[in-house]
Length: 408
Image (cartoon, rainbow, N blue to C red; front, side, top):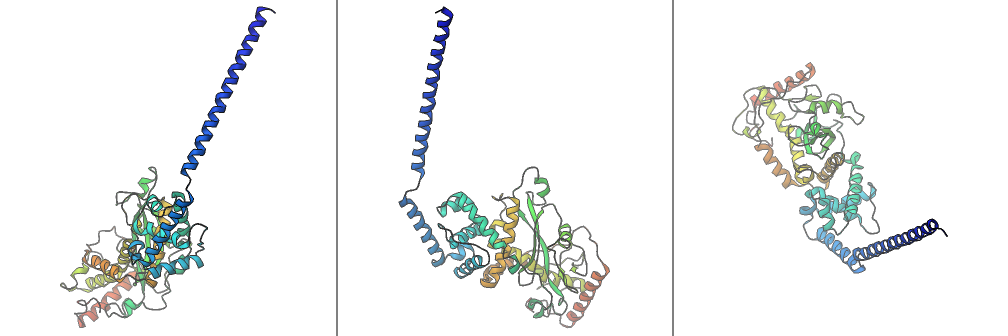
């Protein structure tokens, strides 16, 4: 055998040894990795005792929620209202119990989040659940509540005069054709840095501008959520009038709106340049028809401000000024869901004490002279407003003390 052949054989032998050594090392690494993964899973896996303990904690917590007298404090509604809501979401919203989670727990967790502005991780710990389970069931309940929109967000037909107008001489018959009030509110949202300028309006942080209408018993009748915070109310209202799910005004009826919207036969604004504070009604009498109209217009239109006030007091998740956990789209859906719950609770669990607190705040807030950019007005709207103002003034001259008692 030549020296060259011997060198080749030695090289091949050494190479086979190296490959065998590398193979052994790889096998060892795989075995060690599998052992560690197995041990980790065994350590992280809950024992049967742990699972039973967590289940017991949840059962005790739900029992305390429903029987401990703290239901309204914790989830913003009474025990009875909570039970009715769960039944409603099961029968009409499609919510179902799972093998490991009851309907009551799913709904309670959702209400804990929206009623206290809790983060998912806190509620997950509170209920001894994983973050993914909390998020998954939150969205299920959110969608179930929104599916009830047609049952609870109902636009008025104008067939009857609302009792808040009919039963008060200050408003009837002047506002007999008025079906509600319209205004906008801002809700903080989470958006990308790229989109932030479109959503960052006068609040200084990204928001969505929500347009809503309500009746004078504080029920929301129309909600348009999702417009960026820089959008004006007039622009949103224009969209609301032409979209598929549009704002509808019956023939011959009108809404009360602020000076930032156009004066039309369907939207009555206050007179410009006329300053009047609601809280002054008891010590300063109106001096002319325009002041009287603006006072009574403000007295009625503040129903939308009070509706927003009650809504945000009951569901702090839409009132918070901190950056929300959820996306812009989800936050928009949350606002709509809260409006649906608000209307539901007005029927089954009205909180008069909360409403009185909001009324006091509204009456103490001043309404400064309108500084909005002048909006268009049509002759028909101007004629309706002028006619109402003159009729009011004629009656007021006969009964000048009407304004002293706001209940009249």
